[in-house]
Length: 155
Image 1 (cartoon, one colour):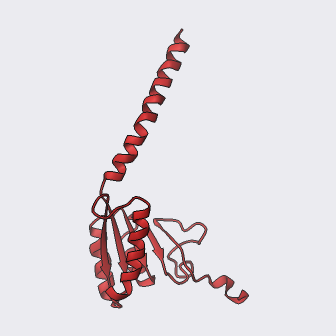
Image 2 (cartoon, helix red, strand yellow):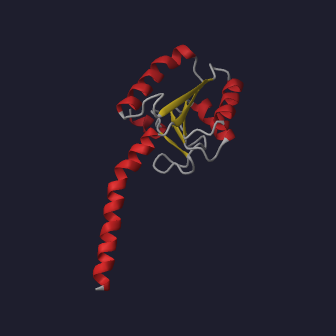
Image 3 (cartoon, helix red, strand yellow):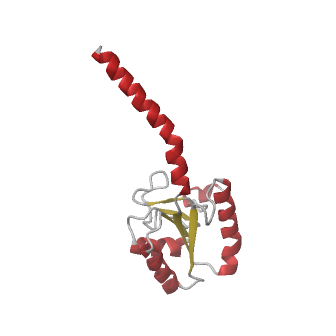
């Protein structure tokens, strides 16, 4: 008898949790998430990249102004400005930072080792010490590069 009650309790608990999952997912989607974008580019250089980023995020259900806020910070080729923008961006405590380019990733890493960072357009992030390896980047940084020097001799 005790076993039957325990099973009924577990089934009721699991049924209630399963019913709540869609609500929790919807609530999470309705929460405004802050994505910081840091690049050493100018506004003109960044415009098509940001348009593609916004478009893909929208396709995935992340709509700017509804459940997504994007804080764009540009260094326009000035390393000191990029570093200052990284400090300000980290201070806003974004949910994640997209660092575009080696200067952007370097600047973000100077100011935070806890905010999740996704990078792109970074030349050889392993040998520069930005990540441990491409397969297992470690820490709070991950991303991808289109520069893979170890296969350069195979071209």
